[in-house]
Image 1 (cartoon, rainbow, N blue to C red):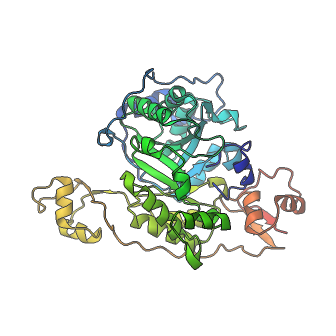
Image 2: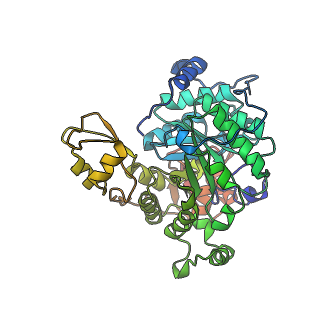
Length: 453
């Protein structure tokens, strides 16, 4: 994931090409915290906070052993998520909430990087400056029907402080926290011991929280991080499956060296996801794949969604909102998540559910401890056993109407940015700005007409 433009890797991809549900219950204490800290929706004008607190739940000074995964609480996201890096890059909260609500998506907002809150890098008046701001943002998005999730970069240089900050994010109202664990400059720099300290302290403070570990999905990159230690404390792994970036000649060579030859088809969504899933299979965790939003090919995205579901993903994410094509957002809306839990309805039988989910009556009975499968109760919640799952149909998304460039007019769609348009039409941001006389390339409005040179 992108960090900030001082990172060479991210600066090269500042256009976003590289990195770019129904509501579920959380603990009552979390709801009380949001209500007490943020107040009513009417008070959430998202005014900048002065002297926002950076305090967090107390963390011990010695690293406890990581608890068995079976003891962890947490529920995986029931919506597809759109990841947000910085408000000054992806849009202000009001606009983001409007777009995500329209497409039925949740937000995954970056809250901190190592031991720094995002206000150090994000120049927006609404930048995350600490737990109080997070509580405001959580309540603001949830009040607008957008489930609020968070993500952060972990470096490992100060595991006590980093884990304390992560715990405070969850305490402030995030439904889940995705921990970005990568080997590049500015990302993970710690040891295995520090990995155990971080995960141990975080789970000690938040045993019932939903934690996902997000990683670069290329097999050789997975080997460069202490994923075993982090996975032991996680509810799921979120591989960054950026097939469009992984298909370069150097990457193809490395794939072959890792024993996976993409062949004549190259690095397709299926290939990138399959190689990652095989590498991650030993951890025994569900996956929540993340795809590249800047790639507007709905055929490729349809394959990505279909293959994600075939590997028991309940939902998935797109990186990142500010550079995601409206066609991708539309496809995500038209292909809803497949939650693992199911509420029994009138007329349901174990047999009909087994057929619908391509599983067996025996598996449903065993998974749910049902002694008599003929005695299902309307309103009863069942856990559907993981398996092949119900077949899905990927809808056909019609092309966006205004596809006349180059040299013609284009009407701004939700999620567009000057950088994304430049890359889509093989031109430059500078040329678009010059042709249209834009004074601020960061301020374009949905419905605005631009000439694409």
